[in-house]
Amino acid sequence: MAKREEAKQTKEQAEPVSFKAKALAFLKEFGIVFGAFLILNNFVIASFLVPTGSMENEVMTGDLLFVNKFIYGGTSPRNIPFTNVRLPWFSVPGFRDVRRGDVIVFVFPGYRDEVESEEFTFYLKRCVGLPGDTIQVKNRVLSVNGEVLPLQRNQKFSFGRMADPTMVDDRVFPKGAPWNEDNYGPVIVPNRGMIIPLGPDNYASWEILIRREGHSIRFINGQVEVDGRAATEYVVQRDYLFGMGDHRDNSLDSRYWGFIPKENLVGTPLIVYWSWDTNIPIYNIFAKIGSVRWGRIGTLIR
Image 1 (tube, helix red, strand yellow):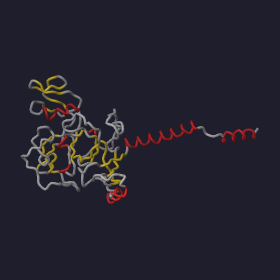
Image 2 (tube, rainbow, N blue to C red):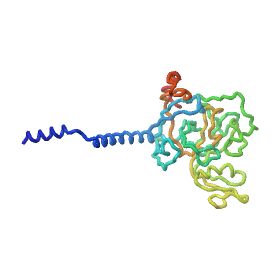
Image 3 (cartoon, rainbow, N blue to C red):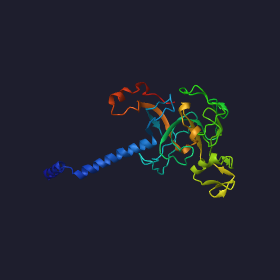
Image 4 (spheres, rainbow, N blue to C red):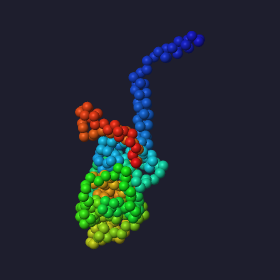
C-alpha cells in the first residue's frame, strides 16, 4: 500500500506543468508586482524629470528627482498614463500640510485664460504663498503679508536690469493687472470661504477661477451673473497656493498663470538620483554619457 502511494506521488511530481498553468502563474505574479508598483508610484514615491530651468540653481534641467508623494497625501491616478484623459481620483491623508518655502510638484491648472490645461502635465515651483497670504513683489523683492521673504540659497536672476515699475506686462495674472514680473501685486491668495466682491471692474480677474470651480459666469447688461443669477459677490470653494520659480527671470509661474489649487499638489522632491543633458539624443550614446552631471547625483532638494 505504501509503495503504491509512493509511486502515485512520484508520478504526480513528474507530470509537466501545462502552458495554461504557467501563463496563469506568470500573470498572477505580474499582477502583484504591477499592483505594488502602482501603489508605490501613486501614494508613496515617484520619479520626476525637470523639463525647464525655472528652478535653477536648486534643480537643473535634466535632473531626475524622487518625489515624496505621501507627505501631503498620495492620490489615485489622475489621468490615463501618456494621455490627456483625466480620471476621477481620490486622495489619502498626508503627514503634514504644505509650508511656505516648500518645493512642490503639482498638476498644472492651466494658463491664465484657460479653464483647464489643454495638456495634462506636472510643474515644479516653490510655494511662496499659502491660502490667505498677501503676495507682493517690489523691485524684485518678494514680500508675504508685508514681510520680506529671504532669498533662497540658489535663487538667481538673469537680467541685470529691472523692469520699470510703470511698465505693464500684458501677460501677467490677473488679466488687465498693471504689473510686471519685477513689480507685482499686492494680490491675496484665495482660501476656502473667502468672499470676493464681483463687479465690472474685477470680472475679468475672477472669471477663470470661478469657472474652474465649476460655475458658469458672464457679464451682461452691466452686471455679473453666476450660474444664471445676478451676483455681487462669490464665495471661494477651494484653497489655493502661489508658486514662483527660483530663477525669477526665467520662470512662467503664478505671476503669469495664476493660483494653484491646493488639491493639485502631488508632492515635494527629495533628491536628485540622476542628471544629464536632455537635449542630447539617446542614440548619441557617448555624448549622452559624457553629459552626466555626477556631482548632482545625491543632491538633496530644499
